[in-house]
Image (cartoon, rainbow, N blue to C red; front, side):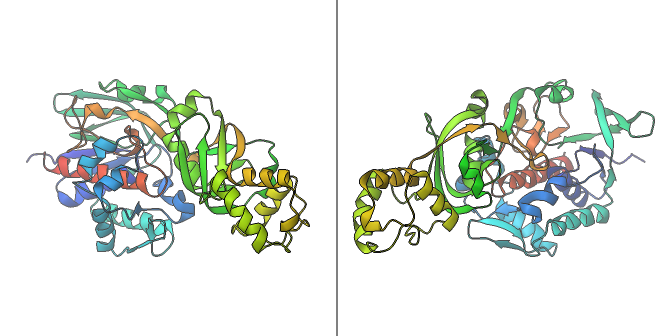
Length: 413
């Protein structure tokens, strides 16, 4: 009797699990093993979206969806024809996990907890007899004939080996190029990794006293470039964060790395206006609010603490009436509202949610199978590839898509 074919998945994250459980479901005769280097499974799923898990995004149009990936757009336009957001929504709903859409398009489980997604994937693994081995590091890979030979290191145990007919690499992004060396020995090339999705540090700036203040809509531009984004902005104890900054960091990942994360930005706190249009609007505001003090009347809907800070930074006494505001202070305030400069010195990334720009070059991967063009039987999924999306559920969607395509290709090989 012929031995069953075996799939080994290296990486116990979203893309690895999704490939494993789908492959095992599609082909019950396939033996499937997940090898996870750490003791924790699905760690990014657990922390995503503040512990709620931003499963995907509501963007239904494939072109619109692919446009949200600074790296990998053309590749994903093809991949999303196989498995996209609508497939993701249906997949989880079929397993009793309905998703909900928030106003900005992000989609979360209705339970509002990532544990729902984790337990769903673990149940699928158990249902289809996927073997999961934690604290098991793959130290070398060789292929002889039709078989892959893996050298494994497990904590407290002697080195061992494992054979596989199919091998999926889904071990996430690595921050350093040398961490890819064991994969590059298989014949693939690397797009140098640099951080993506990080916050901007502005050490020592007085605006940091507003830690915790958020603005629903602000415009942020990197001086001297065409890079700009608009959206929610959050002031933290180290600098500026929120979707506007995170998206900007993704689009500018390589440029900002070249600048060694030292650059200038301009924030427009009221992006409905520029300096010229706000100066014109100011004439009306002075008349309408003439007898009110600037400290008591904020006509722009900004958080009270931010408004008071902008008055102070502009040299405006909050007790001054709108009608009595001197021209120089008025111009200072207008400029602080629409052209507020900051010097960024460094970045902050979150280890659990670390996302890289770069990875295994897409030129060596068959988009319709996620299979290596250089080594048959070798597949890729998730962030290990040179694909990364902006914040909003796009990186998880790539994980589900690439994992499903790989699973489908493996069972039909």
